[in-house]
Every structure is written in C-alpha cells, then in structure tokens.
Length: 509
Image (cartoon, rainbow, N blue to C red; front, side, top):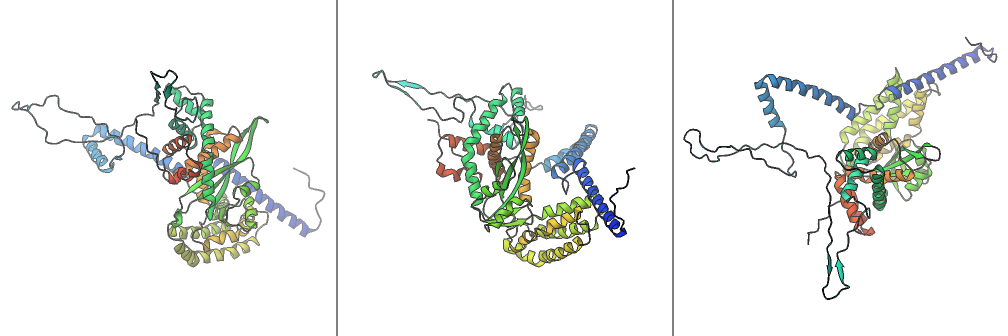
C-alpha cells in the first residue's frame, strides 16, 4: 500500500475537490480502457459490416445445401421437387455470354416397334453456366518485308505498333489484368506471380512491378484530368487514410497519407457522374489538402480534420461536417456500458437518419423542404440539450469530449438543413476509402513514395469505373492502348471512366 502524499491539503473542501477530480480522471481512464478493449477485441463498426453478415449467411446456406443434398440422395420425390424449384428460380443466363452447343442424340434412330425411321418433333434445351479458367495466350505479330526486284536498295515493311513496354512481352490486356488484380481485387504482385506460375508462366514479381510502374506513368494525365473535373464541381467529399510506405533509410515503414476526394450527386438525382480521385502525400500536414483543393469553390463535406479549416477561413470553401462522426463518439460511450446521456443523443440523431432514409433520391428542393419541416426542430432542440448536459458532467470525461466535438462544429453540422444537395454525413467518401484499406491490409505497405503515387493513380481510375458501372479490365485495356497509340492530350475527357466507349477494332487488311 502506498504512503499518503505529504502535500495533501488540510482543508476538507479542497480534499473533496481533489477526490472529485481524481474520480473524474479515473472514470475517464476506465472509458479509454473500455474503448481500447472494444477496438482490440470487438467489432469496430457501428452496425454489423455487410461482408461479415454475408459471410455468416454463406455458412448457413452451405449447411442448408448439404442437408438438401443428403435428403435428395435418399428420396427421389424430394429430388424431383428441388429440381423443379431450381428450374423456376434460376432465371436466364446473360445473352452476351458465348454459347457452346452440345447435342445429345440417339445412337439408333429407328422405331423399336416397326423399325421405321424416327423424325424430330421437338427438343429440350437446357443451359448451364460453365467457366473456362483465365488462360494465357501468345499474340504473334508478323511484319513481312518487301523488296523491289529492280531497285536493290528498296526494302519496305509496315511500322511496328507502339507498345507500353518496348521490347517487353505484355499486351495492354495483360498489364490491365495485373492492375485490376492488384488495385481492385487486392492481390499483391507476389501472389499474382504465384498464380501465373501454376499455369506454367513464370513472371518475376519485379517484372510485374515494372509493368505497373509504366502503366501508372502513362495514366497520370488521365488521373490529373479526373481530379480537375471533380474540382470543377461545387460539392465534394474529402477524407484521408494512412498509407504505410517503406522507408529504406530507417529500415522500417513511415506513415504517408492517401487523400480521397469524391463527387457523388446520385442521392439527390444530380446529373454529374460520380468519381473519386486519390492523391498521395508523405504526411498529414494541412498544406497538402490546401494545395490539392486550390481553385475549388463550393461545399466540402469532411470529418473533424483541422486541415480543411484553413480553406474555410479563406472564404472559398464552406465546410459541411459529418453527423456519422458525431454519432460514432456517442456510440462508443453507449456500447462500453450504461450511458444515459450518450444513449439519448443517439436516439435523437437516429431520428435525423430516419428522415434522411425517407428522402433519399428525391430532388434537392424536396429534400430541403422536408429537412426544414422535420429535421430542423430536432437539430434546434439538440444543441441546447447538449449544452445543458455539458454543464452537469466532468469536463475531462470522454462524454464531455464527444459533446464539445459536436458543439464546436454546429454550423457545419447544420448546413445540410438549408441545401438539399448536401448529405447528412461523409459516408460516401468513407466507402471510397475501404478498397484502399483492403489493399493496404494485403500488401502491408507501398515500396516507396512513388509506389504510393502509383497506387493513388490506378486506384482512382478503378474505383471511378466501379462507381459508373464500367468494367475496369476492359476500360484500362482500351485506354492504355489508346494512349500508347498517341491519343491527343486535348482529348483526355474522352478517356475518363464515365465517358468510356470501347475503341472499335480496325479491320484486318
């Protein structure tokens, strides 16, 4: 047992104040411990992640299918019922898929009764989905040489087509496949090399890295033009996430940042196509988003990162803050144990989200009208309620921090009430950051600042393809081929994912 401090005051009132302060600090530390335990051992999302829910459903469906298979093996009538159900529910296979027809015919077409010839009266047609594993093939290009019999010095030959990798072996489709596998399917290059080796194609990881680097360099102008088009909008979402980068000088990794800027007007029926641009920076200093957003004028929807406040101070950008970040702080408190104030705050914020769910997809005017009528009273009542509760609790507690976080951003949190084009939260850009987190988890780190920049360039185009329902493999194959062939810099808008149209193949001579 420790000895009492010799510096304790003799005044009972001062002692009570010290005890109250110590108890508040102890409560705060307990809350931090609970948050750390939940962060380490519990799920981190406020709601069950969709992928985790689907994983559980997959297991349940597999067990159910096993039970059906066992029943069908023993009961012919059950097998017939299940067969009819499958035929009724499977739907039609896509028309664009190639068909390989297989005719199963009689070996003997004579009647078993009179031995006469049988004739066709119809047929049953069944379609099944088949899969041919990805196959490598070799494109052999021949360029005949021609000479004149009369002129000995004349030798004619068609010019060799330009290649992404001069003297190398990959086609544009091969390089696009590596890019999509790495940045859309989150397969590091060494894993891709292992997959290719199983098919007898030995490609060193460094070779694949060379392909990625050349493609990223080629695609930089398209990435830059994508970001220019996004900055021309008057509303953007912004967020950032860590990007571990190898630091050879110290023999370890350093923490860079990938800043994400998103345009998505679909919630209110806007006509501008959605897009996302990632930009890499070696640190999280405010100078980076300031430089990125130079020339941007409009509303920027963000979390509490202080770097964006400098933009707002220049009167060129209005900040709309994120209610999901406010809700998350109260959620962490309520999840850790009994917390009546946090629980009540969550209930009030939930009412705002219920209203937003009802007006999603409506026009800006409709959204604004509903918010003015129903959401504004909720927000107006919440601010004085939080202020009153803040005066009743310890200012050092995590609850006080959560309340101050909300009250300190109240103007930005209220901005969505007056503009139907502004969302209630920043979830659009947080969804755009999740693919980066998956790639980061599988690849662990980027090899250099340049590699992180490649990551930003290619991931921007891949994720913008996804937002616009464009198949990224076909897009990158075609765009790389166009640029290699000399597509003009003045026509970069034609290469953006939302403007993508496959280049028609030239007929063979």
